[in-house]
Structures are given as structure tokens and as C-alpha cells.
Amino acid sequence: MKTRAPQVVLVRHGETEWSRSSQHTGRTDLPLLETGRKMGEQLGAPLRSWSFAAVWTSPLARALETCVLAGYGDVAQKRDDLMEFDYGDYEGRTGADIRSTRPGWTLWRDGVPNGETLEQVSARVDGVIADARALNDDVLIFAHGHVLRILAARWLDLPPAGGRLFHLDTASISVLSTEAGGAQPVLASWNDTTHLKG
Image (cartoon, rainbow, N blue to C red):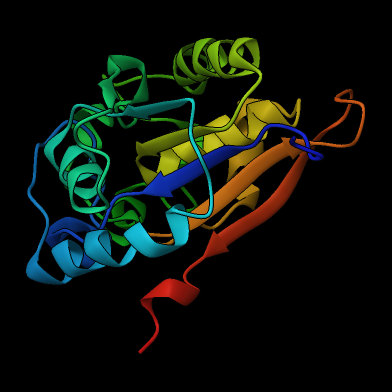
């Protein structure tokens, strides 16, 4: 019998060429690098600490491949609402490159031309959160840096720009939950990469 509240476990995909170079990777469907594939395999052992009622993944190759390598490909449901932020004209560009023409630019305050808004991404992840809470059981999600940071912010009842507070590494494991009684959403753990050491 479970004595703790249900948990939502968030996994950012393994390393790609653009995550390594800090290029904004929205809908460009890049594969994992070999290091990213190894990261995916290393996720399997720590994730076996849970028994998941549902496994959801972004359909983009880097998240889906991470899911498969971690051992959940046969049970995962692809969800378009877990796709990464659509960066529009800033797809493939680094923050430093963007700031060379827009000094002081941040995604969280200034957004992107011809892409999604924070509010649009927030609406997507709000639906994911509602589905996870309705299950009232442990859920595993494979997705991307910015969409997962916004999901965490919304879980905590913060505005979507609150995602700026949560740094997230590739192949990290983060856990969302609630305090006893289920009323207060909390961050149980964040950006755990200890499984990648050694």
C-alpha cells in the first residue's frame, strides 16, 4: 500500500548535437548523439524505483529514443502536447547569437518571433497536468528542456515564466508531487543526474 502521494517523474531527453552546443531545438527532429544514447540506457536503473501507471513521451525522436533506451518504448504513449517549445525564427540559434542583435533577450520575457508564446505552451502542459492528476498514480514523462520547465512551473501554480527558475540538464530526472493530503503541489526533487556519473 502506498504511503506517499502520487509522483510525476520528468525526464529530459539525452544529449543531441544542438543541446551540446546550446542551440534552441524546437521542432527540428534531431537524433541523439552516441553520448545521448548512453544516457538513455543509464536512465533505466533509477527509473525502476517506480511502478508507473502511465508513460508519456514527446513524439520527437530525441525524447522517444530516450524513452525506448530507458526501457519504456513498449508502454509509452506519444503526446503532441509534450513537444518542445516552437522557437519560430530562433530555431537553431543560441541565446548568445540572438542577444547579438537583441541585447538582453530572454525567452521568458521576450518570447520568439513566429513561434509559440509561453501561454500557448502553458495551455499544452496544463492539459498534461490535468491528465496526470486524474490518474492519481505515478506517471513518467519524457520530453524537452523548456516544455518540462514550464510544466514544473505550472504544477507549482506559478506562471509559465516561472520555468526560468528551473535549470534542467539532459537525461536528468525530476519529481513532482504533493504534500501529504494532496493539497499542496511540491517539487520533490529536481535535475538529478547522479545516474550519469562514472
